[in-house]
Image (cartoon, rainbow, N blue to C red; front, side, top):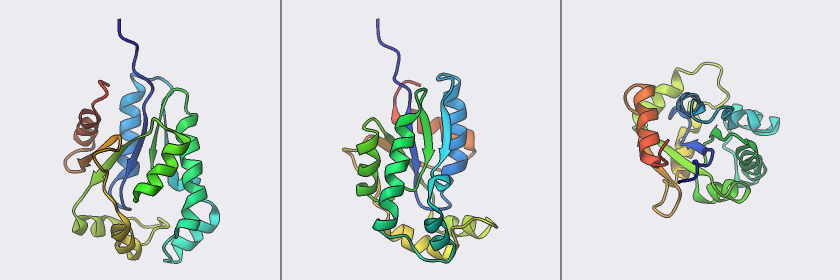
Length: 175
């Protein structure tokens, strides 16, 4: 008899505009059917006010800004007894390492969208604190998931339901 699968602890990652929040929320909703109580968290909501104000002003965050925030993201991911899905940029491997320190069983789903489409998406998000002017700095910082990291790269093309299905198939946990 096989043991039931552990509750998922997923980070839906990528640069701003890639669809982390939309896909992450849909992924959490789909997985909650199998893991009742599984929650979705948007890491944007975990930023301290100083980070939000800096980004709103068009100033990219540096590692000193990100480090405490990433620790909180990892702790939030680990805290969900029923599992969690968190939308978080997690652009660099060392950022993902900080999350893994707090939540060793974290799995990353890197959403991939063509750069031109990202710019268009950012331009159509009124009221979001992340201006389109910071996209270049995010793309410059992006280090794709590596083969030795738990996770997968998934194209965010098609319907949200199709992307969620591809993500679940790509991470291969039998959910």
